[in-house]
Image (cartoon, rainbow, N blue to C red; front, top):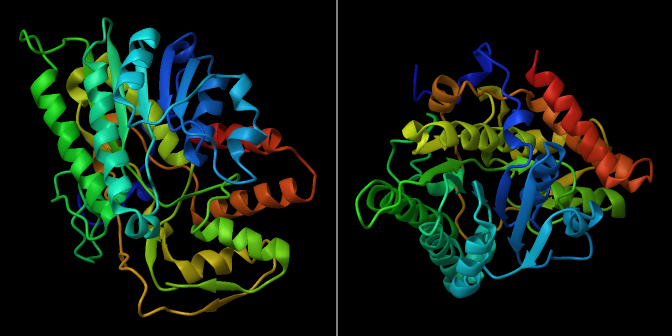
Length: 375
C-alpha cells in the first residue's frame, strides 16, 4: 500500500536498474558538487559508463577526500567554482551545453546549518536558482536532476513513509533550505519549461530526494560512519549523540543508480519531470545503535551514548516511500541492511590496511552492485 513505509524490499524487479552504457557513452554531463562524497562516486560511475563529465564545485574539504584519492581532477573537466557565482555559473553552462545535469552542490550538514544558516540558505536555495536560470539558455535537449534530500518533508515523526505529494517543511536551516529549493525547482519547471515565448522546449527538470547514504570514502566531519571509522583507527570509544534516531540507511550506490535511471528516463520523456524518492527497503530503517552494532560485527569497536540536551534539534524518525520510483522507473534497492554495512566497513578496512586503493575499492563495490541489480 502506497505511503506505508519503504516497501520496495518486497518488490520483484521488472527490469534491470543498472544504467545503460549506450545512453551514457559520449554524453555531455554537468555535475555540480563533484568533489564531495556522493559527487565523487557519481563522477566515477559516469566515467566508467563513458560519459564526458564536467564538474563544478569548491575544492574538497579535509586532508582525506575521495575525490583526491580517485584522482578525479585529471579525469573530469574540473572547475573550481562557487555555485553562488551567478556569472561564472552561467558562462560554464553555456560553454558546456550539457545534455544531462546532476546538481549535488550543497551545504549538506544539519548541525553546520545552525552555525552558518545564511550561507546554508544561499548555497542551497540561491545556488539552485542560479543553476536553473543558467539552464534556460540550453540550445539542445537537457535533462536536469536536482538532488535535494529526504529531509524536505514536514517531519511529523510518524512511522509511515513520506510520499512525494506530502507537505514540505523543515525545522532546521538545512532542511528548510532544501524544502525551499524544492519549491524553486517546481516553480522553474512550471514557469520556464514549455513552448511559450518566455520558456524553453529543451529543458526538463526533476528532483530526487534521498538521504543518509553510507559507503566507503566518506571522511566528512559530523557524520556517523566517518566518525566511527576515525574512532576505530584511533582505537577510541565513539561518542554517539542520538543513538535512538532512526534513518533509512542505504549504500551510496543505491540513490546514485536512481539518479542515473531518472536522468535517462527524463531525457526520453518529460513525463518524468517531477520529484522522486529513493530509499532502502523497510528493514533498513534502523536506529544509530543498530547501525553501529552491525558495523562492529565486521570491525571490533565500541560506542558510548551521551545525549546532549542542548544539542540542536534533529528528526528522530524519518522514512520514505519509494512506490513512485518503483512503478514509474522500475527502480528498487538492491542491497539489504547487512550487505550495505558490510560493504561499507570492508571498504574502509581494505583502504586503511593498504590492501587496496580507493579506486579498486570503489570499482569492486560498483561491480558487485551492478551484478546484484541484474539478479
